[in-house]
Amino acid sequence: MRDSFKSRIGFVLAAAGSAVGLGNIWGFPTQVANHGGGAFLLVYLCVIFVLAIPALYSEMLIGHHAQANPVRSLKQLSEGRMRPVGATMGLLNVIGSCLMLSFYHIVAGWMLVHALGYLATAMGLSGIADFLLTGSMVRDLVFTSVFLILTASVVLKGVEQGIELWSKRLMPLLVILLVGLIVYIASLPGAGEGFKTYLIPEIQQFTDPDIYIAAMGQAFFSLSIGLGGMMIYGSYLRPGAQLGRLSLSVAALDTLVAFLAGLLIIPALFVAIKLGVSVEQGNQFIGEGQLIFAVLPELFGSMGFAGLWVGFGFFILLSIAALTSTMAQAEVPVSYLLEEHDLPRPVAVAIAMLVIALLALSLVLWFEPLFGWVVTAVTQFQLPLSGLFYLLVIGWFWKRSNHVTALAAQGLRYRLLRWHLRYICPVLMGLVFYQSAIA
Figure 1 (cartoon, rainbow, N blue to C red):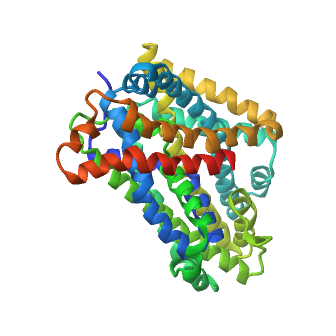
Figure 2: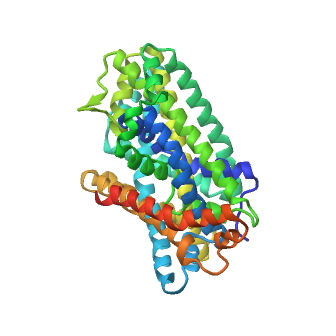
Figure 3: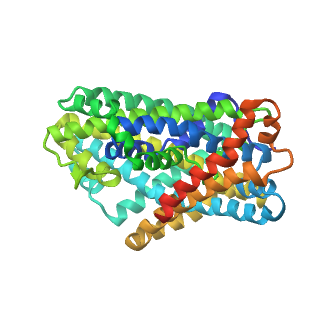
């Protein structure tokens, strides 16, 4: 008997946890800051409904109907001559998940090590703090391993007692930390200008076509679509689940966290400017890796002793966001080994985590030539390509017992939904793929 989620709230928290990752906390605010502030935020919210939710619904529906891992699901629903293509795409999802988890665990280890570094500094443990906050191969290997063990310990317990249980614990804690940090940053000089930039759109920004392409890409990536994680979660839902409502709930919670991250990061950038910290590179705000590991630590350092605890809270927040993503995505290769090779869960988890660990070790040892290439291959090529394929499966390749086709017979709004999934969404996803991988 396949494992399953016990409750609706457990599924929503787990699926939102899968979507809520480092991209929400550092990627979304960076996109907002560099693409028109409030204008980007409004466009992003519209795109969530137009593209991201239909794509999320499609991925979940594939897994829920097939009740299987991505390889079997895509093979089963890609009928006729497309069946081998579906199986190949499913296998690429498994491989892509392992590749993503290899670099994600390294970055997650950096988050954890910075959190502990700030804690050690606050407690006066200068020797430990120096080791933690000074980059080294030994440090990276140790903390990548620590995070791999954390992920494995959750996935080993299965869906209900592992992923669902820990999602119920971690997601509320993540939101509480976010709100607490927002309240503190809001009390500092300069934060008001950041809130104004974030929440009040400038009309002329809506004429910039780059905003719309960037918003589509960010909305798609924010919901963690394209590597089979939502597909396998959909397969763990019991028959009769209301996927439409669940998709809306997951997207709403994920968007809320992204919105809160913007309320934290954008004002923090303006606080940093007020304190004399350099936050711009050319005509744009410094983003992503430099923002997290250079700009914000400099801001925390300028806050004195309080900054140590703010830094600790911020990097613990990022560590939680990373863990909710890794424990979800790890279920993709684990489910493949469980169902296609009939292995017990402990053996499947051990094999999957060993493969991921070996890939992560390779990235640490040969960081310069490999790390950026793997990140690019997964995020800019595979994610949008897989998302496009899911939409094609739902709209074109799945013919017998297609749930969307059956819904279309029930009324105009469902016919419009089917038309949207068949024509509009693939075109928009094609634009995302072109902009991300080719342009």
